[in-house]
Image (cartoon, rainbow, N blue to C red; front, side, top):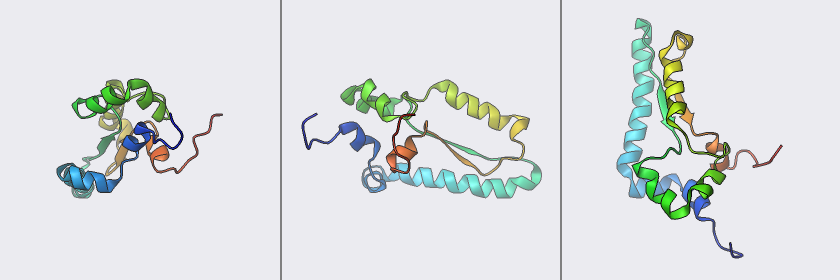
Length: 131
């Protein structure tokens, strides 16, 4: 990459909330609605021993991410992920099975980010060091 050039993957992975609000306002509204509904239903249904949780997937291959993956390349996307890979269907399935099992009987109202740790790189919370 030329000196001073921006990494398209970093730009795509770090796009600001403002970008989403401008170009995908329905997505932002729907996401906020799901988060609020999850919390409200958890409070309302908790006394009836019904748990309500939300799974918030990060980068998973889908129709929405297909263009970016084709344009930038799968290797570049994988390099931007702390786990070195996209999410897989079994990642969501495992979390859903856990949340549906008796093992999560005392877990309600959560918004579980399933992004392989990408949120830490995106917000520069933790350094990208190798151990």
